[in-house]
Length: 193
Image 1 (cartoon, rainbow, N blue to C red):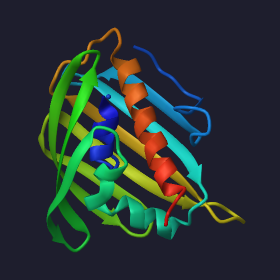
Image 2 (tube, helix red, strand yellow; image 1 turned 30 degrees about the vertical axis):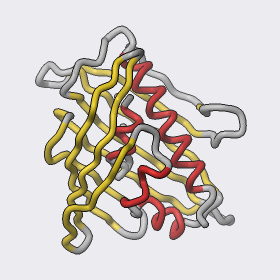
Image 3 (cartoon, rainbow, N blue to C red; image 1 turned 90 degrees about the vertical axis):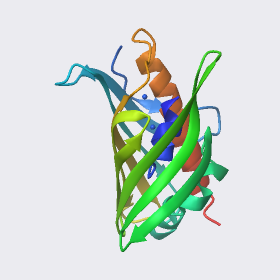
Image 4 (cartoon, rainbow, N blue to C red; image 1 turned 60 degrees about the horizontal axis):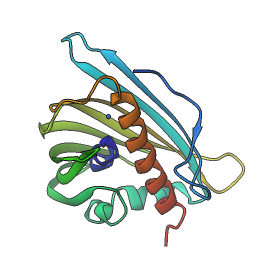
């Protein structure tokens, strides 16, 4: 569910218990680590903290090119219907993303308006302006691998949806959605052509 949000915000984008360790959506899918934690915010909301990372063979420059190609995010991100750059002022952009979150038989349309701050060549920060989240802060960080070609890709987010996410299964739903998002992003980054 939040993998679309996290992906929508990709820009990276994104929502019980704490989980860590390697994850992969299916055999042959890229491997990555994922941690999702649900905590109470100071305002009493249920806040999700997400940290994920994985390694791809692509160079940091190739990864940067793909992650900042906002017009094509919907081509590979699950449940993301469209992304539109509304304005650009140097390294700061305003981006609108439309998608949906799904839980069992229900579907929740999601619209996000975010500010993206590109800190070339290795970091993208995303913050919520308006939309179907109370809080959304995310970042993508790129780290070149020492002594080899390839890139370590890190994704971190803090989110609070405006819609209800059932407490009993909320963290599991968020974890599965972010896992789908990360698998899709890493798979796309591994074929930079």
